[in-house]
Structure formats: structure tokens, C-alpha cells
Length: 142
Image (cartoon, rainbow, N blue to C red; front, side, top):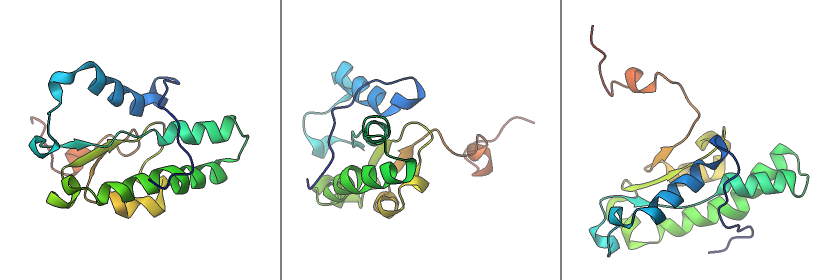
């Protein structure tokens, strides 16, 4: 959907392949999927922006900032904008959507796409390891 950069997800190292792992999990566990998207409680948007970024850095030799900007503009941003047009996204304003970002990349690395994912759940390796406690997500025993 208007993407300038598209690559099939590939495994390229443990923490760098979280996006790939989620896609592989869905492929390997069809019992976790529904036949009709209207039956889904959550919608996973498969994407591999880290793989796109990595290929721009290593394959084309681009510096970090040029590669991250193109991975966002040419891949991630068109994809999340497309997701907003779907009936599944419109039903709950995207609060039922989730995706995963690999490596050390998080929402903060994609400022133009960030607001398009504000209502989504986003799995990422970045952030405080204490976030659940600080957010009151659970309480540790005294």
C-alpha cells in the first residue's frame, strides 16, 4: 500500500528478529487464528521494519539516520496508514491492534508513524524494566 521498501521477514539474530518470531508463531500455530477477522479480539499487524532498516544500513551502507528515516517513510508509515483504513481498525479505533518492534527500536524512533500507533499495543525491547510496577500493572508482595 504505497510502500517504497518491502522485504520478506527473515531471521537475523535473536533480539533483532522479534518481528520475525511473531510472524513465525502465527504461521506455526493456526489454532491461534480465526477464520474471519470480525471474530478476532486482537489484530496483529505483521511487519519487519527492523529488517528493512538493517538492509538499508548493511546492504546499501546508509548511516543510521538516513536508514531509519527511509525504513519509516518507505515501509512502516504506509503500512500503518493502510491499517487505519481497514474495518478491523475502525471498529475500535485501533485499540485492538498490536505489532512488535525489534532491536533497540521503539515508537520513539519512528516519529512520523508514532501517532498512527498511539492506540495500539506495541511490543518492544526498549523502555524501563520497571514499567509494569511504575504503571501500577501489578503489585509485588511486601
